[in-house]
Length: 347
Ligand code: SAM
Ligand code: SF4
Image: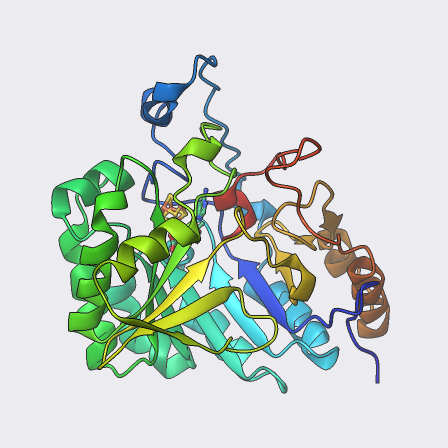
């Protein structure tokens, strides 16, 4: 049986699908509102502010739900068993439960997860669950409402809290929080974020800040590394290391001894984990990316709109996966930022 395997022997299991490049938040590290807000980071640099890089696409450029489900079905027949919907903010797209229903019906798809900023989760929560959503990850970088506003550009802390509580009431499990920690912005919240996760019975993942922000303000100094985060946590909690979730897992995991949240550290900058990567990404406008940092994208949309049969589509996917990069080069001289930013690629 055909499989998606790259030239380094990595078997692709995980398809990340961005369903929109739009977002209602303006996180400073992702899609800052203005040049000034992006410039906020630049305190230690004399570089010229970079114009905000946005590339909204008209609706007709997005894949339809039927097109997305078709790609997922062909990929599932080639061994993909896990799908994560992301964006932009995925819940800005209409009728997301309809897409989830189509994905849940695909043989071989065992896990459907959603990454969301949480703003619109509350009103969609029951429909999402009924449609077959298995897991939800909320982005939450602050447990202080005014710092939350500073980081996201939105007065939405209360909405996100209500969404997390509703997800708990509905029994989603696990519920995870993603937190990006940036020096000088929320590094004082590492411990409070874990306490929040502990109180609410959530898992938490700390993600290193990557050079994919639309303000192009990323500098190495802004990155609070996984080992710094671990140090801050060890000063406060008695931590026990956990096994990797599976061989291709991105997070090194810990838990608080005596009962506490599972804590994951995702360290693409300080300790890349490309060697075991099992992911590919589909952008909202139908480009397949073999790495978050790919400099080349593979356009699937024309094939989907030219009545290509499933066999040709499978062959195309197999060929593209063979072009998967060995790894990214963040921190090395040869590193080149991709043209597209995190919100347009899908985080
Ligand atoms: N809007 C949704 C959300 O925020 O959860 C989904 C899309 S967002 C791009 C997905 C994840 O990427 C979020 O957890 C966010 O914190 C993370 N992210 C965005 N920009 C990042 C950056 N420059 N470095 C590291 N993580 C980033
Ligand atoms: Fe929007 Fe998510 Fe990016 Fe924040 S991290 S700006 S919520 S896409």
